Length: 279
Image (cartoon, rainbow, N blue to C red):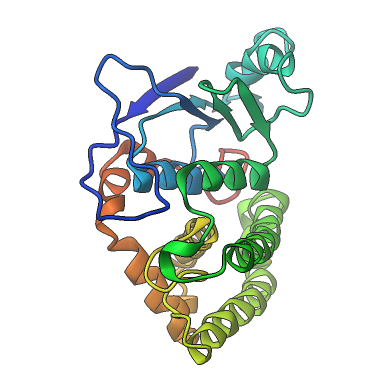
């Protein structure tokens, strides 16, 4: 089952020299389309970015549905015959297509690969860091890229745990090993924020002093997913040992520009598809 929802950027935004603040009329179709499974997964940061920037976008979601016989129906993406779904049509525009993807309908551009999608949206929405906060644009972009790579390493490890454990029992028994790995990533991210503070460059967010940039959205999502996983396992929060990450997680969630996202159905989608031991 494939659905799409248009989110309206009806948020009053503060002045921000590098942020796009489009607010199309009700009869104008969104120019940005974000495609993914009907889960948070890798698309949540992209959806948050568009909401933060106040941009209307089409949230094109595909559902992975358990068939009751141990299998899963993914025809909403691949098509009933495996080659006649939305993916087949998008392959004509981008041979690398997969989920997630971004379509910029105004420019006729189709983007695949998760970090490429995040980076494209960041450039279009003014979320790649830059001069608005007194930062050097090239330096800020390089910092964005580094944190994006670091958090993708964390995300890939998490996916191996969620989907690769083989069963709920395997997921639970391998939790100690994965959460120890998470703490290694958190230690690096905590040290980055401390480094930014020592340099007098903020330290609440990962690149800019007072506003989020593209990596903040994915870091927050990964922290929040792991908080949910710890709660699911009846374990204490991992953030107790990482006060700067804890402060970041709290400050980001309270951003008024993200109220529309957190009030939307997308914020309560499952974290993973039903093949995962935790979703």
